[in-house]
Amino acid sequence: MNIQQKIQEQIDTHPVLLYMKGTPDAPQCGFSHKVVQILHRCKVPFHSIDVLDDPEIRQGIKEFSQWPTIPQLYVNGEFVGGCDIVSELFDQNQLQPLLDKTKQA
Image (cartoon, rainbow, N blue to C red):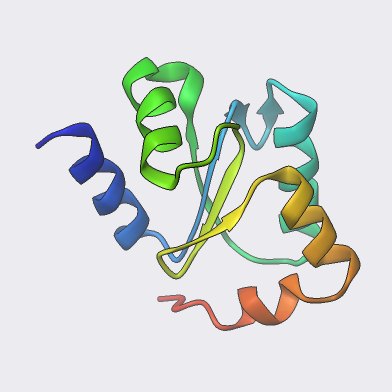
């Protein structure tokens, strides 16, 4: 399985998936920390993948999404955006309805 297939499988497996630097309990950058805080405020369960643990994923996710920065949020298999977009959606009360549509098990 190549890295793009692996990323697609991760996205397909988790209804809310955050590619971030660090972990939700110990984010390694301010942008990742901010998105984690937003997701906690939305009270949505999410899975995270620490791109610092895997350089192949760190580069591969940027190519996969055609988005140059981390963090990256995916909801129901769709790329939502990075920190700025997630923050803007949250501030405009547009993120919660998107998260409410997740296919939670």
